[in-house]
Length: 354
Ligand code: DOR
Ligand code: ZN
Image (tube, rainbow, N blue to C red; front, side):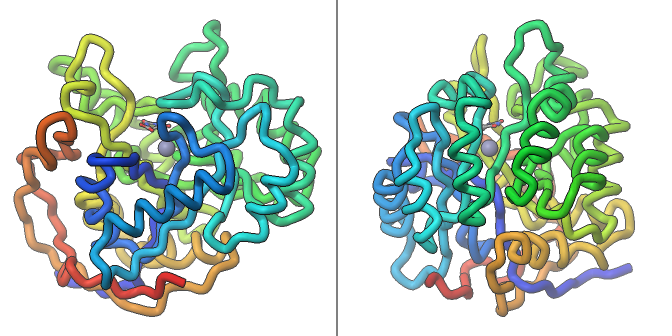
């Protein structure tokens, strides 16, 4: 049995850091494990211009210790109003790596998202021209569509037409949760990828609904049935470079999760690399972990792979019940339970920021 593994330092290609006190509470968890992260712009109000995004990036860096090497790469929020000058600016700024498409109302803080996908086709054309990737929250918001089918319907109704029309646009289907999404990514043309979260690799919808409602297992896209989870694990561990890590770690105050209308989002940043490792170890695929965590995402974004190494040891360790205080208290995934793997030297962050 392998008890220790060394990997190139991983990156998290889909992350929510929030702002203000919550940012202070959570950012260190990600910076301790990952070299870079693609930071989502769904703040309140959302970061819809390059300037807002770069100001937000400065607040992220200011929340880190001076010697931290963590490099946040920002995703611009795509709205109905986004103009072409913003796209040109985003494409020329190394700190902005992508544009995020939320169908309006699909998830947390997505009200400013796109209400008519065809209306933003000129923007997609410009992104295609500049090589700026489109990150997609792939769920329809149509109230007639069952929540468990929303990903598959989005792919058929919207995503396939988009990738056919813009044949050189690079697209990431974020947080793939179904066998349909996996099949789409596997069979699509070049330039299409999918991120997978640790929680969708480890949990199915029974973890949300059996024995009571578990609000800390509620996220969007919602957890699916076990056969879908198995399809995600198979894809993640297949060595196919179209699939790479994006945690979608999404902190919410405990009081807003444990509520009559709890918000969507699972917090995994405290142990993301360790949880991915466990998911791969569960199916005997540790040899495929490094590509998924550390290589394929950087390759997709045409960035150099990180050069530093991290070490993980098989060391069952209890996870904290919560992080932060007061209104910023966050309950992490598997609070009070054990992680099976532990990152060594998790205080050293080693990768160049620039
Ligand atoms: O569960 C989720 N939480 N899914 C998302 O798409 C957004 C995220 C958030 O921002 O809380
Ligand atoms: Zn997200």
